[in-house]
Image 1 (cartoon, rainbow, N blue to C red):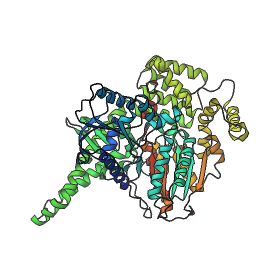
Image 2: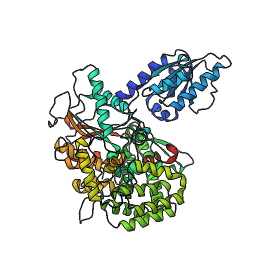
Image 3: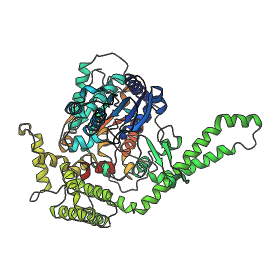
Image 4: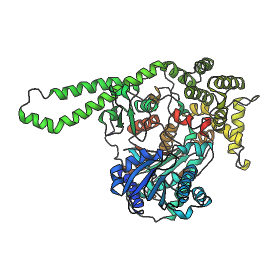
Amino acid sequence: MAHSARRDSPELPDFSILKRLARDQLIYLLEQLPGKKDLFIEADLMSPLDRIANVSTLKQHEVDKLYKVEHKPVISTSDQLCFLIRPRIQTVKWICDVVNTDKVPGKSRRYKIIFTPQKFYACEAVLEEQGIFGDVSIDEWPFYLLPLDDDIISLELPEFFQDNFLAGDQRWVRTAGSALHLLYSLYGPFSKVYGIGRCSKMAYESWREQVEEGEQKARQAEIGNVFLIDRDVDFVTPLCSQVVYEGLVDDIFRIKCGCVEFGPDVTASDKSVKVMLNSHDKVFSEIRNEHFSNVFGFLSQKARNLQTAYDKRRGMDIKQMKTFVSEELKGLKQEHRLLSLHIGASESIMKKKTKQDFQELLKTEHLLLEGFEIRECISYIEEHINRQVSMIESLRLLCLLSITENGLLPKDYRSLKAQYLQSYGVDHLLTFSNLRQLGLLVEQQPGETLTVMESKVGKLVNDKTAGKLTDAFSSLAKKSNFRALSRKLNLVPKTDEEYDLRVPRDMAYIFSGAYIPLSCKLIEQVLERDGWTGLEEVTRLLNGHEFAVTGSSGVDSRGKNDTQRIILVMFLGGCTYSEISALRFLGREKGYKFIVVTTAITNSSRLLEALLDNHV
């Protein structure tokens, strides 16, 4: 059931130093404003901050009261106000209003703004425009990385995807480069850096600039190779339904900062319970990467094992009982509590998924991935839209249909779009514009076959003298090649025998054996080939921007020492728990250990919600 690691698997670096570093830096900044102060924290910083410095830590450093930034008049009576915020113009304007409101009655306070992870010039410009630049002190808290688990680190920047890929705003690219530089300075030097995607290339260049500006120190490397990948290289994977346990928990309960809140339907009481989901949870760590069909079997076996451990008490003498109580009982009770919660969560998942005809949904997705019975799939999607099952789910299926079919026929596009707008409202016209811009939902060009179009784009991409592609052709090159990529990389395994999900044979198990995630397949191929050699056709279909650079350490990346088998994968634009499970599987099979660094954890709902009309 639970997969065991290879005996020769290397040890992961200790990332707890990232938390300690961030906490020490924050404490230093708070102490720059001596005396009692009230702290205003932006809403989406509260959960990450709680993982770094809890309330008691803040109180020790003279933080009196904590407030959530709500863009309303402040009720604080403190003489010193400190604002911990993201570099957002809207929030800076609110702070300007607070300061200017205090000025009217001549109220004298000290103000400090701490931007995290960095400040932007635009924010300082607003302070100048509003005439309060001289009234506030400004600092940066370089809180780039939050370790969520032993092998998952997040920048906690969900807006990265929308800002970079939709709005074309590249302000977070340097942030990604700085995050990589922090890892390099603590755990490098890296032997080799691979990457694919325009944003990845820019983040790599930003990191290299920072390396060249800083001091070079000789030290023992703890990470071997690095792989950077843009989210728009692979949109299919986040659009597929997640069926591994951790992915389903995220889809249904929303894991936030590595923590999930289980409601009364899971806890079987009138209270909600917050649970930290990581490798320290003995029950969760064994089922997180499992296909959901295997989870109940494991949980029932775990319950039997626990009962056996409890039954050991019978027939014990006083000395043995004392040892049992002091050494084992607490651990057994904790495990029992977690087991009950995960059984409750699994039952809740089963109820919700059965209600939504989940098997029929998965069957449609698998047919789309294989390219079979497309008319039946379109009928299913139409029914889904017309029954108003779910606005986001309908959009997800439309996008999956478009990407796997390399765009929709004009009549299908118009019909499905009209039905969607009738069901969910014409205000989603802008949503369709956003999806078209990203190549997620497009219509095929009339009068041209796919192969002609593909070859035309291919020539344009390969022709160095063609200069910059138009937006239309760039979008087409991004969106139009799933079938060809699937054939080249064997993303949809061809087999006559049934896929045994209890004994997975490849990464396709995370999607019930139907599809190997493109992102993870690329990583596997590049590591196997030690570069992009032999993958030229694949990179052409993916619109290029690939690179492979030997690091400053000069170590041959083919050396199989422990460090060379520790691979850091950085997803720019978000990463799903399914991809993390697939990389863990690949690591067990090949003797690697993968560290996943992501701008944020994503799934189909989060990805599409960022593109809804009211988000732009």
